[in-house]
Structure formats: structure tokens, C-alpha cells
Length: 110
Length: 121
Image (cartoon, rainbow over all chains, first blue to last red; front, side, top):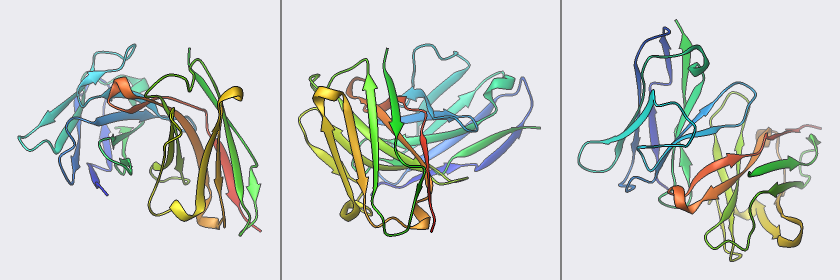
């Protein structure tokens, strides 16, 4: 199985801040990396697919990228944090079965 | 517009079999490349992928749960059914079904609202 290591597990920030969440896969996944946002009691919502493509309708303050040269490191960046952005975020690889998720990052208001 | 809705029991006893139904609209299994997956989330924990069924009847399972899972589809009813045998309290979770879009790097672009299942005697 491909392991997804996500960090940090929790993060405190203020409205207007810029935050970055990282996700590392245990092997190359060729940009088959998605980011989801989940609010308490709600289903996850797709934010980013293909490592860097913003899902239609999502605000441009969210961005994703593949970093490094080995295709295993990814980041989700949120610029100018808004109150509605405080939620949990998960990365997920869909390169190989079984699909696997990161352990999640809970973004809280400082 | 794609929508998915999970249904099934909220409480099952240990050792029983869980049957969950995902009823969807806005897409069809006649679309090549399309898939529907099941994902669960224990209270306060991370998401866990369980199973996936494709338009061509191909199925995939989480290796750790493969012996307990069966996923099927009813194309005429626009439904996907997941059964999980030998339920245990550790299977207590919210279970989601989701549409897998092969045009979006196989991401799950639409999710149901989830159904909460408690395993307890």
C-alpha cells in the first residue's frame, strides 16, 4: 500500500494568515493527489485534484503543488485565511489501489 | 448535477452483516470510466477507503477488509450496495459513498452526506 504522511496534524492560525499543509507519499504517485476539506458533521469536499488543479467553484486562495523532484511531496496552501476555511483537510492518492488518505490536518482559529 | 445518498441501518450488533445502499443521480454506469466508491470515517479519525466499483463491473477492495466486503451495482436503479460481514465495534463509523471521476485524476468529486453506523450489542 502507498502510505500518505500528512503534516502537521493540527494547526492554529488567524484570519488573513497563509498556511501550508504537506503530504508525502511513500512512492511516486504521478500527481494522482487530491485534497479534501471537511467541516464538522459534513462530508469531505474535493478542493484540489491532480496535485494542483483547483476544483471548479472553489476560491483561488486555495492552491496545491507538487514539490521536490521525486514526485512524492505535495503541499496545500491557503492564502488569506477566511473564517469558513477552519476545517480539517485530507490528502488522498488515487494512483494505486488501495486508495489511501493522509491522517488529516485540523486547522483551528488562533 | 450529481447527488449521492447513503441509506442503511444506524445500529448493528457484533457479528451481524451490514448492508448499505448508495442511491445516486446525475450520472450513469453506462459512462465508460465511471466509478463509485465507499469510504468510512470512525469518530474523530481519518478517512479510510473501502471499495470501488467501475462501470464495467470491475471491483476493488481494501486488502485489509477484502474478505468481509462485497460491492455490487444495480444499474437500472442507479444504486451501489456495500455489504460488510462480521461487524465489530471497531467498524463504528460514518460511511460515505462517492463518485470517482476519471477525468479528475480519479478523485472523489462528489460525496453523499454519509450514514452513521454504530456497532453495539
